[in-house]
Length: 75
Image (cartoon, rainbow, N blue to C red; front, top):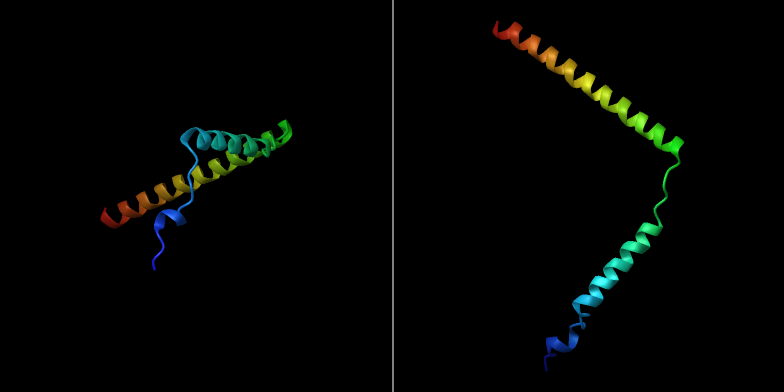
């Protein structure tokens, strides 16, 4: 005999219990967050700024070089 699917299906909590569980999980995750010190924040921001400047210089150099190459090829 085949089993019915309704007996195998887990009972789902109502919408308000699910929302409450979701908010509880958010609060639990936020408690795990470690905020950086001002010194750490400064140095991370500096590292990002330097990296962005490096990428800007790289893209500018590639744009200039490929532009010159295109002008040289197609005159």
